[in-house]
Image 1 (tube, rainbow, N blue to C red):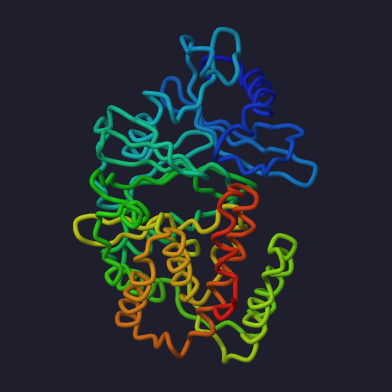
Image 2: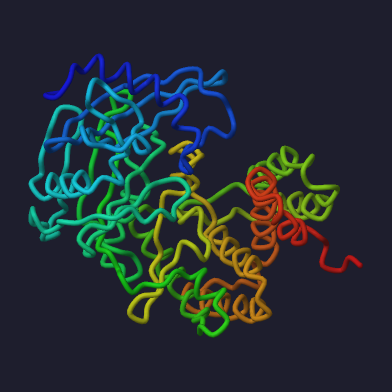
Length: 412
């Protein structure tokens, strides 16, 4: 580093992050206390930018995080993570210059010690076209920055070694010409545990796109549920072309569902009996067609833009290991995720939207959903069990929504 001693920088940063990280909305520490933070790698970008990868050690293991950082002599104390001499270290996602420097590095296909930047073929990136930046501040697990109101740079925070599924799937679907995903324009990669690892991905910014959740919860907004079903089915079909098809053993799937149910049982307030019956019955089904899927599909993961639906965020559940996020599943897992999201809206139109969504999905996919009703119900209940755990830990005032879904339909 040109502005200060790297060892002093790493020591000061690691010490300060023990207290700074737990207050970040994207930090997945889960209330655990970090024992220490070690700086694993530093990549200098532009005049005052650094991409840091850090290892956070807890009593029960280690997690790795990506931190874009800016070095400022004039940084206000309220924004400073740590100081080394007269230089303040700040969160680079909020810096006016660093995100633009990252864009320029992708446009130039720059390689520096600790990181590489690339533009995708036919992306048309030209250095200097991103002269302003603003962090969106709406994500829970990553950070997205709008550049020049033309591009959006998604910076992955918690890292796992290897290619992030979000970049992998977007690339694959883009090559197949899918009209229901946003093109990949560029990417940033570092190294973790000796493996090339995704740090960020660049897409066009769709300024007038509307999130599916916002449309569904705004009373006067029309909601094209049937078209959403068609879009999800079209993406599933492309995913089979890109990654192939497989089957799941119904007995193994049943055991996985029951294992998750047992782990969540203390939080279910005695409402797991119907789910247990349904999950047990899955073992008697024939082999389940499987493929790569979105993995975490809900109304917050779809956008309406220019009269079409777009699926976004193919990262899967960020807390899960990459191998599990890349695993094949029945496409009905994604269908169930959307159905549960409709239920969350609380709209009186939710049952109508659900029916239209299923109609559109069935027509486009050719899958007879009535014949697979038992499996779809199992995935819906599995999602509700997951939601109970999530809401209990993060939004206890909303846990009644998934608990209601676990009640047997004919229960009084």
